Length: 223
Picture 1 (cartoon, rainbow, N blue to C red):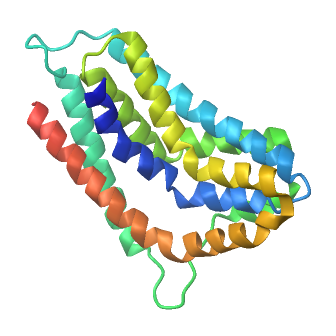
Picture 2: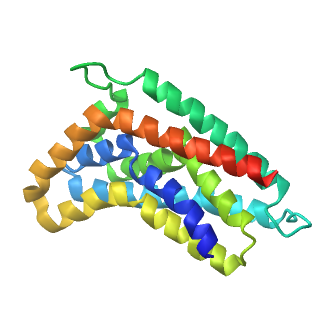
């Protein structure tokens, strides 16, 4: 299981540092329904990561591993494809980075966060964790990596839970901070939002490129 955990840690950290979900949760925590919406978004986020991870593990469980005891060929191919996709995404992010004092554009739906109710916040939590292309690819890659190590189902579950826990730190920390400190957390959270909006496009492009290249290497090595 240690091998599985070692492979998923960098992937989970990139999921945790996703800028759009962090900015979204900070904006939600500034609304009148901050407590309810923040918790609902967090639950949706956890559900999204869990759904994708469990589906990949279930599919992998129905496919035989390679004869030599190593990762199945389909796992290596999937990891290679996901790695190439992440490299492409990294270049796209880099080309779209803010220049000079320019601010990174935020999704239009963020302007409607004030009107969100818990059900909608929960839905967006699911969407941003499981349908967002980058997070989807990273979660699939992590689950495939877990499956490729050949550990038993109980250990797979533990490894996936660790991935989900680490991948939730980015959106979970602001919610916990707000629940503990209330309005006293506002200045710090606003600072985090501003920094993420201004700098994280470049940082995420670099990190995504590094992870993508790693996955390409892992995929090629497994073939």
